[in-house]
Image 1 (cartoon, rainbow, N blue to C red):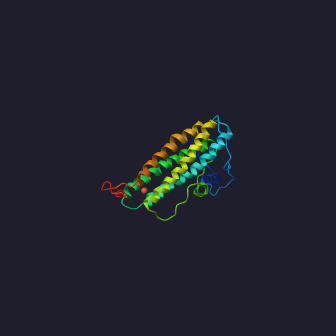
Image 2: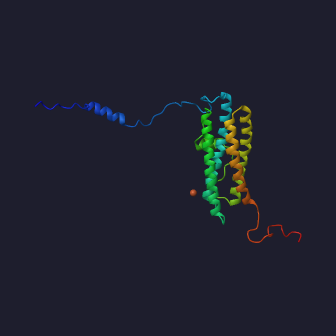
Length: 213
Ligand SMILES: [Fe+2]
């Protein structure tokens, strides 16, 4: 019988080195690979200047859309009164739709070679939507604030859509027209109808209806 051949495994030092390699490398820092505002051009058959202008415009729209999205959540949480349940649900539905727009706009900026704004502090510095107070407000004020934010977005989105179309950036034009503008217009309708003063129980009893009788 031949003597048992001893199996040669990894040495103690090799085992130690292996364990070292399995440890996560934490607290890593390096300079950015792309500074904000610079374009890392992708092969999408669009001029770099066109990409840069669209990315700049879309970052403004992104900051305003993120602010409107977050204002919807604020109002979803803070709404009060006899229409609480209906508005609580409506505000959350619109929040979800605005969140989808945020993702679409941000990813469009990235594919144009730009860098999407992302963090709250940067959004707060950039947005044109007036900052609401931290406290709780009445329903008509909540809805008015949302309508004002929608109108800021619609105005800039239409101008940006025209600019993108004229520059040949059809993808940005389509995102703005088909998604941003149409969604915002529809949400404006659903909100604005809540500010029409119609009687709930007795027809013709609205303020001023009896004047001159
Ligand atoms: Fe909720």
